[in-house]
Amino acid sequence: GAGVSQTPSNKVTEKGKYVELRCDPISGHTALYWYRQSLGQGPEFLIYFQGTGAADDSGLPNDRFFAVRPEGSVSTLKIQRTERGDSAVYLCASSFGGRRETQYFGPGTRLLVL
Amino acid sequence: GDSVTQMEGPVTLSEEAFLTINCTYTATGYPSLFWYVQYPGEGLQLLLKATKADDKGSNKGFEATYRKETTSFHLEKGSVQVSDSAVYFCAVEGGTYKYIFGTGTRLKVLA
Image 1 (cartoon, rainbow over the protein chains, first blue to last red):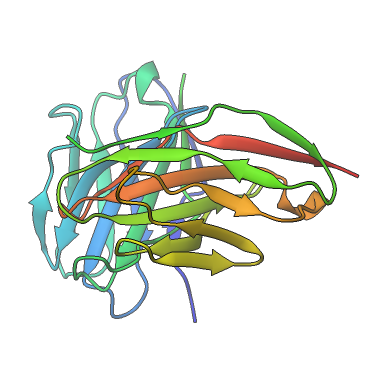
Image 2 (cartoon, rainbow over the protein chains, first blue to last red):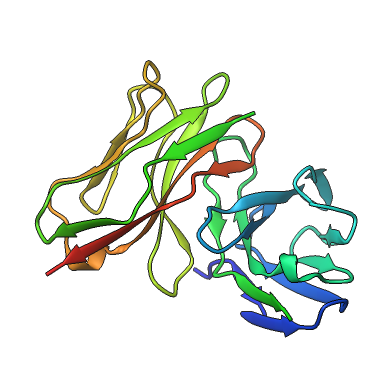
């Protein structure tokens, strides 16, 4: 079946601009996660959705970052007033939602802020 | 909070050599443990997992055993191939649903 998909695969923007990154989870998965992977590092947790609500947003670095999942399926990560330090690969994952359920990752969106 | 420590790379091996990548974790309770692999130009793929003490996860010739007494989940393979060249990430899920990843270990296998 189809895996997690993310669009765009690459995004280049200028400092100060607004960007949106989209994630389409595996059908039937109620839980959705966003992570950020900087060069040479492991992924770092940003936010976790169970259904439509953000169950844990403790990893969002500041209030420039925001994510939504209005219908409990597709999610959008929004970054306002981008900074060069936001450049990274943004990964989305989904799972069936219970504890110990495996998270399946998408290919990521590579964001470059010039 | 939860944390993962992985051996630093890169690790360079000849084909058919034995592989060990060390991973230790800190977490309360009974976390689940994972190894993910990232091949060049591709996304993270689950390699194997274990959800309770003494469980052995295995896949594609790779194995890792959940050792609660040493808080470890070392990845092993008896005979590596060139196609195993990738970055390997150890991760722990300690009951908060979010995964905590190590920094990754790059493996390069030479023919």
